[in-house]
Image 1 (cartoon, rainbow, N blue to C red):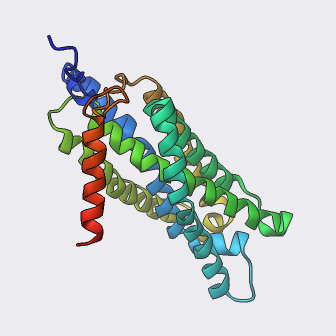
Image 2 (tube, rainbow, N blue to C red; image 1 turned 60 degrees about the vertical axis):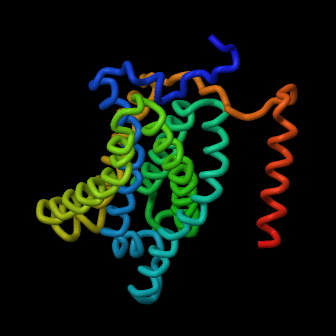
Length: 255
Protein backbone atom coordinates (compact mmCIF):
# COMPACT_ATOMS: atom_id res chain seq x y z
CA UNK A 1 0.00 0.00 0.00
CA UNK A 2 1.26 3.45 -0.85
CA UNK A 3 2.75 5.14 2.22
CA UNK A 4 1.45 8.54 1.09
CA UNK A 5 -2.19 7.38 1.18
CA UNK A 6 -4.12 9.53 3.70
CA UNK A 7 -5.40 7.89 6.83
CA UNK A 8 -9.05 7.37 7.61
CA UNK A 9 -10.97 10.42 8.74
CA UNK A 10 -12.77 10.54 12.06
CA UNK A 11 -16.08 9.96 10.36
CA UNK A 12 -14.79 6.88 8.54
CA UNK A 13 -13.27 5.55 11.74
CA UNK A 14 -16.63 5.74 13.50
CA UNK A 15 -18.53 3.55 11.01
CA UNK A 16 -18.18 0.59 13.40
CA UNK A 17 -20.15 2.29 16.19
CA UNK A 18 -23.35 0.66 17.35
CA UNK A 19 -26.66 2.58 17.27
CA UNK A 20 -26.53 2.84 21.07
CA UNK A 21 -23.08 4.44 20.93
CA UNK A 22 -24.25 6.90 18.29
CA UNK A 23 -27.27 7.87 20.40
CA UNK A 24 -24.96 8.52 23.34
CA UNK A 25 -22.83 10.78 21.14
CA UNK A 26 -25.89 12.75 20.02
CA UNK A 27 -27.16 13.15 23.58
CA UNK A 28 -23.73 14.13 24.91
CA UNK A 29 -23.26 16.69 22.14
CA UNK A 30 -26.65 18.41 22.38
CA UNK A 31 -27.19 18.40 26.15
CA UNK A 32 -25.09 21.54 26.62
CA UNK A 33 -27.01 23.33 23.91
CA UNK A 34 -30.24 22.21 25.55
CA UNK A 35 -29.08 23.61 28.91
CA UNK A 36 -28.16 26.98 27.38
CA UNK A 37 -31.46 27.52 25.58
CA UNK A 38 -33.39 26.24 28.59
CA UNK A 39 -31.78 29.02 30.64
CA UNK A 40 -32.47 31.55 27.89
CA UNK A 41 -36.16 30.66 27.88
CA UNK A 42 -36.46 30.75 31.66
CA UNK A 43 -34.64 34.10 31.85
CA UNK A 44 -36.98 35.67 29.31
CA UNK A 45 -40.03 34.19 31.02
CA UNK A 46 -39.07 35.72 34.37
CA UNK A 47 -37.44 38.92 33.09
CA UNK A 48 -39.87 41.14 35.00
CA UNK A 49 -39.19 39.28 38.25
CA UNK A 50 -35.43 39.34 37.68
CA UNK A 51 -35.61 43.07 37.03
CA UNK A 52 -37.40 43.66 40.34
CA UNK A 53 -35.03 41.39 42.29
CA UNK A 54 -31.68 42.49 40.88
CA UNK A 55 -32.21 45.79 39.02
CA UNK A 56 -34.71 47.87 41.01
CA UNK A 57 -35.56 51.27 39.58
CA UNK A 58 -38.17 53.97 39.95
CA UNK A 59 -40.46 52.27 37.45
CA UNK A 60 -41.05 48.75 36.17
CA UNK A 61 -40.08 49.58 32.59
CA UNK A 62 -36.57 50.70 33.54
CA UNK A 63 -35.88 47.64 35.68
CA UNK A 64 -37.19 45.36 32.92
CA UNK A 65 -35.01 47.04 30.31
CA UNK A 66 -31.98 46.58 32.57
CA UNK A 67 -32.81 42.91 32.96
CA UNK A 68 -33.07 42.44 29.18
CA UNK A 69 -29.87 44.42 28.65
CA UNK A 70 -28.00 42.01 30.93
CA UNK A 71 -29.60 39.14 29.03
CA UNK A 72 -28.16 40.57 25.80
CA UNK A 73 -24.70 40.95 27.33
CA UNK A 74 -24.17 37.22 27.00
CA UNK A 75 -24.26 37.48 23.21
CA UNK A 76 -21.29 39.86 23.27
CA UNK A 77 -19.03 37.10 24.61
CA UNK A 78 -20.07 34.49 22.07
CA UNK A 79 -17.54 35.43 19.35
CA UNK A 80 -14.69 35.43 21.86
CA UNK A 81 -15.84 32.13 23.34
CA UNK A 82 -16.07 30.52 19.92
CA UNK A 83 -12.51 31.54 19.06
CA UNK A 84 -10.88 30.68 22.39
CA UNK A 85 -12.75 27.45 23.12
CA UNK A 86 -12.68 26.38 19.48
CA UNK A 87 -8.90 26.66 19.56
CA UNK A 88 -8.84 24.75 22.83
CA UNK A 89 -10.99 21.99 21.31
CA UNK A 90 -8.54 21.62 18.43
CA UNK A 91 -5.58 21.34 20.77
CA UNK A 92 -6.96 19.35 23.71
CA UNK A 93 -9.77 17.46 22.00
CA UNK A 94 -13.54 17.69 21.77
CA UNK A 95 -14.29 15.97 25.08
CA UNK A 96 -12.30 18.34 27.34
CA UNK A 97 -13.74 21.36 25.53
CA UNK A 98 -17.34 20.13 25.77
CA UNK A 99 -16.89 19.26 29.43
CA UNK A 100 -15.56 22.75 30.13
CA UNK A 101 -18.38 24.51 28.29
CA UNK A 102 -21.18 22.71 30.11
CA UNK A 103 -19.43 23.29 33.44
CA UNK A 104 -19.20 27.03 32.75
CA UNK A 105 -22.85 27.21 31.73
CA UNK A 106 -23.89 25.38 34.88
CA UNK A 107 -21.88 27.79 37.03
CA UNK A 108 -23.63 30.73 35.35
CA UNK A 109 -27.05 29.20 35.97
CA UNK A 110 -26.24 28.46 39.61
CA UNK A 111 -25.01 32.01 40.15
CA UNK A 112 -28.30 33.43 38.86
CA UNK A 113 -30.47 30.95 40.74
CA UNK A 114 -28.65 31.38 44.07
CA UNK A 115 -27.92 35.10 43.89
CA UNK A 116 -29.20 37.27 46.74
CA UNK A 117 -31.44 40.21 45.99
CA UNK A 118 -30.49 43.84 45.49
CA UNK A 119 -32.02 44.65 48.88
CA UNK A 120 -29.61 42.23 50.55
CA UNK A 121 -26.21 43.09 49.07
CA UNK A 122 -26.83 46.14 46.89
CA UNK A 123 -24.81 46.82 43.71
CA UNK A 124 -22.81 43.62 44.05
CA UNK A 125 -25.71 41.51 42.79
CA UNK A 126 -26.10 43.29 39.40
CA UNK A 127 -22.36 42.79 38.88
CA UNK A 128 -22.72 39.11 39.77
CA UNK A 129 -25.57 38.63 37.29
CA UNK A 130 -23.61 40.38 34.52
CA UNK A 131 -20.58 38.17 35.15
CA UNK A 132 -22.78 35.07 35.14
CA UNK A 133 -24.27 36.06 31.77
CA UNK A 134 -20.80 36.77 30.37
CA UNK A 135 -19.60 33.33 31.45
CA UNK A 136 -22.67 31.69 29.90
CA UNK A 137 -22.21 33.56 26.63
CA UNK A 138 -18.50 32.67 26.51
CA UNK A 139 -19.32 29.00 27.10
CA UNK A 140 -22.08 28.91 24.50
CA UNK A 141 -19.77 30.44 21.91
CA UNK A 142 -17.44 27.46 22.23
CA UNK A 143 -20.22 24.95 22.81
CA UNK A 144 -21.98 25.20 19.49
CA UNK A 145 -18.93 24.73 17.27
CA UNK A 146 -17.37 21.90 19.28
CA UNK A 147 -20.68 20.07 19.66
CA UNK A 148 -21.51 20.37 15.96
CA UNK A 149 -18.04 19.13 15.01
CA UNK A 150 -18.52 16.19 17.37
CA UNK A 151 -21.83 15.27 15.74
CA UNK A 152 -20.29 15.42 12.26
CA UNK A 153 -16.98 13.69 13.02
CA UNK A 154 -18.11 10.90 15.34
CA UNK A 155 -20.46 8.08 14.58
CA UNK A 156 -19.41 7.32 11.02
CA UNK A 157 -20.28 8.80 7.64
CA UNK A 158 -23.83 7.50 7.63
CA UNK A 159 -26.58 9.85 8.86
CA UNK A 160 -24.20 12.73 9.58
CA UNK A 161 -26.81 15.26 8.51
CA UNK A 162 -29.41 13.65 10.75
CA UNK A 163 -27.03 13.70 13.73
CA UNK A 164 -26.14 17.35 13.16
CA UNK A 165 -29.82 18.28 12.90
CA UNK A 166 -30.25 17.48 16.58
CA UNK A 167 -28.20 20.55 17.41
CA UNK A 168 -31.00 22.85 16.25
CA UNK A 169 -33.75 20.46 17.30
CA UNK A 170 -32.46 20.62 20.87
CA UNK A 171 -32.91 24.39 20.86
CA UNK A 172 -36.61 24.08 20.11
CA UNK A 173 -36.98 21.28 22.65
CA UNK A 174 -35.28 23.40 25.32
CA UNK A 175 -37.58 26.35 24.59
CA UNK A 176 -40.66 24.13 24.90
CA UNK A 177 -39.33 22.53 28.08
CA UNK A 178 -38.44 25.83 29.72
CA UNK A 179 -41.73 27.57 28.90
CA UNK A 180 -43.75 24.49 29.86
CA UNK A 181 -42.09 24.14 33.26
CA UNK A 182 -42.34 27.88 33.90
CA UNK A 183 -46.06 27.86 33.11
CA UNK A 184 -46.57 24.79 35.29
CA UNK A 185 -44.87 26.44 38.26
CA UNK A 186 -47.06 29.48 37.73
CA UNK A 187 -50.15 27.32 38.24
CA UNK A 188 -48.73 25.41 41.21
CA UNK A 189 -47.29 28.32 43.18
CA UNK A 190 -48.81 31.62 44.23
CA UNK A 191 -47.70 34.88 42.64
CA UNK A 192 -45.94 35.94 45.83
CA UNK A 193 -44.01 32.68 46.03
CA UNK A 194 -43.06 32.80 42.35
CA UNK A 195 -41.72 36.36 42.62
CA UNK A 196 -39.92 35.59 45.86
CA UNK A 197 -38.07 32.31 45.24
CA UNK A 198 -40.13 30.07 42.94
CA UNK A 199 -38.47 31.33 39.77
CA UNK A 200 -35.06 30.22 41.11
CA UNK A 201 -36.17 26.58 40.97
CA UNK A 202 -35.93 26.47 37.19
CA UNK A 203 -32.40 27.87 37.10
CA UNK A 204 -31.34 25.29 39.67
CA UNK A 205 -33.10 22.56 37.68
CA UNK A 206 -31.02 23.58 34.67
CA UNK A 207 -27.89 23.32 36.79
CA UNK A 208 -28.78 19.73 37.69
CA UNK A 209 -28.51 18.81 34.00
CA UNK A 210 -24.80 19.59 34.08
CA UNK A 211 -23.59 16.49 35.98
CA UNK A 212 -25.43 14.27 33.50
CA UNK A 213 -23.88 16.12 30.58
CA UNK A 214 -20.39 15.99 32.06
CA UNK A 215 -20.71 12.25 32.68
CA UNK A 216 -21.88 11.59 29.11
CA UNK A 217 -19.21 13.75 27.57
CA UNK A 218 -16.40 12.20 29.54
CA UNK A 219 -17.43 8.70 28.44
CA UNK A 220 -17.98 9.15 24.73
CA UNK A 221 -15.47 7.62 22.35
CA UNK A 222 -13.26 10.09 20.57
CA UNK A 223 -11.24 9.04 17.54
CA UNK A 224 -7.71 10.22 16.94
CA UNK A 225 -7.42 13.34 14.79
CA UNK A 226 -7.32 12.65 11.09
CA UNK A 227 -4.14 13.20 9.13
CA UNK A 228 -4.20 16.65 7.56
CA UNK A 229 -4.12 16.65 3.80
CA UNK A 230 -1.81 19.65 3.61
CA UNK A 231 1.58 19.93 2.03
CA UNK A 232 4.58 19.53 4.30
CA UNK A 233 7.88 21.33 4.00
CA UNK A 234 9.49 18.28 2.34
CA UNK A 235 6.61 17.77 -0.09
CA UNK A 236 7.85 18.43 -3.68
CA UNK A 237 4.41 19.76 -4.54
CA UNK A 238 4.55 22.40 -1.81
CA UNK A 239 5.88 25.04 -4.16
CA UNK A 240 3.04 24.33 -6.59
CA UNK A 241 0.49 24.77 -3.80
CA UNK A 242 2.03 28.10 -2.79
CA UNK A 243 2.14 29.39 -6.36
CA UNK A 244 -1.46 28.39 -7.00
CA UNK A 245 -2.53 30.13 -3.79
CA UNK A 246 -0.65 33.29 -4.77
CA UNK A 247 -2.12 33.32 -8.27
CA UNK A 248 -5.63 32.81 -6.88
CA UNK A 249 -5.31 35.77 -4.51
CA UNK A 250 -3.75 37.94 -7.20
CA UNK A 251 -6.44 37.14 -9.77
CA UNK A 252 -9.25 37.82 -7.29
CA UNK A 253 -7.77 41.17 -6.36
CA UNK A 254 -8.03 42.30 -10.01
CA UNK A 255 -11.44 40.72 -10.66
